[in-house]
Length: 578
Image (cartoon, rainbow, N blue to C red; front, side, top):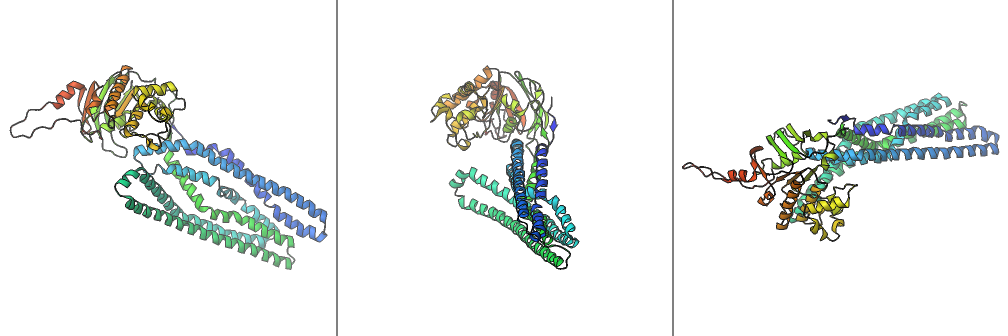
């Protein structure tokens, strides 16, 4: 059964937080209603308490106001707390899809995949700040404007005029900051990518004397990032300062207008003070929105990138085939590298039965490593079919497929963790017996025991504490973990000594004896010791396929040479980076 498309992971995660957003909206409504406390209190004090000089009334009003302010603080804290947890919930729901998409982007050769985790951090940080609460407060501005109209129409229209100015400033902020914010994001992604490249290639940079040149390049990229960030910051801070100045002026204008109305006996002193407080509260969300516009734009762009990158995710099949035990088959397979339409493998076909071992040899750029990536499902088949016991690879989930396939790439990379964790592929349900069996099958058991802490030895970042040969033998043990049916080894003995070659031969024999299939991309002849079949690739096409001795004898046999013609080239065990 083929996997079906499921809705966008980002949309699903956001929809699952709908009830929490409703709770935030409810608490925001209560907060904005309680924000009227100060205005009503001042109105009552000036219009009731001062004329009557009643201390009990003042005390009673003060107690009620204190209780309302306590509720205000509690509701404001609760909505902020809920928003923070919405950010954490989105992070937990999307971190897996984001990492999976990042890995897929890397396999496809798509740039910018590492930007997605930073985008998720940006969204979470925004939800934990003051920006979202400001957005929930904006719809309540008409309430405060309506109350000002009730107090006096002149006060209401003055507030409307000031609000219109701030709304124009907010729209200007949106229009003017959109492009600078996008430029800051792009410059930041380029800066991070360069830093990561410098970190990965630190040894080459130091050995080749490239420090000054790569530092100069980083300075150029960093200067562009800092300059664009400064420009965006200057723009938002300028508009924020203008909005703050307008609000202060409007508040004083409301006081002055209220005083004029009092002198003309059209309003009371309480109305004058209350209208000033109401105008300040009405315009505060707009001012805060302008001040938080840059984080809001950044979070919105980050969310749009995540939603576009995640797209439609593939749901795991509800019913998967049984674990394969019999056959690997390729029929008229064409494969092109991700992002390219030019096929590297052309019309490749073969059939391997359980217990067989195949060595793939050929000149450089012949498609050998492309074949290895195709067999394990890293690169998809463009045309034709690849089947295990008659089933295509996408009929299993990624985890199921990984359990029945063992793969060791040319460049073995380990993760920070212990030797045992790396061998077990960080399986949370790993067993001691399975780890020991994989180490012994790879002939790495004694080597691992010789490490400082044996199987509990930390390998360091990317296996940096181990030699190339040690990493390769641990990578072989990882490939053999769980007795996978199909084992694909790409140049497995590049860093091995004679003992390692013997261990590799034994490991290949062990897979074949238990009924598995082994495919070896061969460079050194010692890799062919445990193999019974050989395939020769050249320019992406099969030149020969059959029993090892027969294929090698024919490929190495000298061809008849005509008089005066150049001698033909013999097939050699060439570099396997095809």
